[in-house]
Image (cartoon, rainbow, N blue to C red; front, side, top):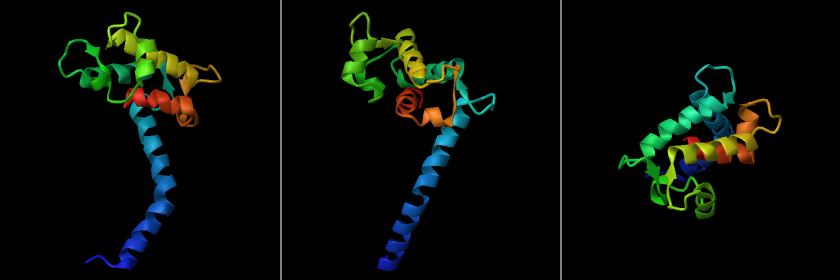
Length: 132
């Protein structure tokens, strides 16, 4: 049987370590997207990660992602805006166009790279939803 003290200690540990865990999770995402280990993600690295994810999300291998396969990475409105042929799916090129658009939105200094701070911004988190 779990004591109240054990529960209280577990909750206290979660509250104290929460920010540290979030920071380490961001760091591990940056490390995952940064194969050259320069501490930043450039557009080519983001597109490479997006291409690999696209392949994993396309289990029927038809070369497109529908709303179900996207698994909440885009809202219905975002999907409609990213779907120029209005067929309800995204091809790899259409998906990569959204990635590039979000990358540029997350790069306010326009240096062509995203650091941990930029990836943690609202625009950076929107990009990350397309990469992991």
